[in-house]
Image (tube, rainbow, N blue to C red; front, side, top):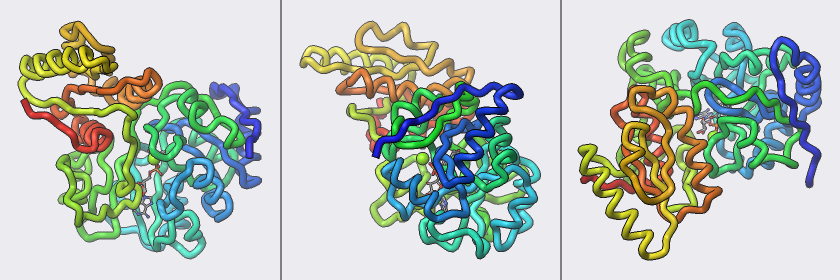
Length: 352
Ligand code: TXA
Ligand code: MG
């Protein structure tokens, strides 16, 4: 079914009218995409099963993959979580509003249609002013996964959302480019030692500074997971975003990485293939062939996070056959960047 998707640019505090319209759609059980500080989310009423079902349908997402419920106030957590462990309260105090999602035992009124059938619930209080305003004006808890078609990179601007979901949802609130660019860090706080289920802007070190030891789910290590590993975040088990091109991460000393990429780009181009190169600002000019995209300077990991998904989308739309990417493991949020990049590459990497 095709619907007319309303797209509205909103600048607070003047965008009140668009916000009211979006809130009304959500209250009636419709779908509204909105910006958060991490990526754009596709929102629906978190306590209504049929609203969640619409999200799955629009995204083409398996319905056993649970949604994150967004709240506008730390106190709302008591409504959704059956218990709030002390460490979780400490993390909420420090990092909310912000790019941290925590997994709790769910309270009775969170429907299983939102949690993918699980007894736990993922909760996050976003910091984006538009997201917070939408939560407050609508007066509901908003369940929202990233606003992309399943299997595509998360959207970092309204145009990405339009590419994927135009005609499938009621409204897109355009709040410009997001600030962070990759999805929130997910921490399971139902365990005595909390476990990171998805790395993000809030690093293990930042968490440990607040609450002591934190573990990493084996599924988020930067090595190809062995078959037996079942990730605790159901979403991490699906083949995530995979570019149409064959993506390979090249690691090693800078000069050797450049030489490897130059040589292989030349070879592939001679065979008639289109080749993309993902490079840092510092080295981009060394690549004399291929379609070079830079996602920022190694000294500015902010721009690397922010531009990663956009660059991958651009390669997809150009239709390159091969992508060679430099490694970004040494930048400040390198762990989260490499987690996304290695997944996109199907863990294909070349150490030179
Ligand atoms: O930054 C973000 O987190 C964005 C913005 C919109 O808030 N949202 C987002 O949602 O990335 P999504 O659905 O694309 O990713 C949520 C991840 C999935 O991998 C899902 O399996 C996991 O969170 N998750 C949700 N509820 C869970 C639960 N109860 N237990 C374990 N994992 C859960
Ligand atoms: Mg997602």
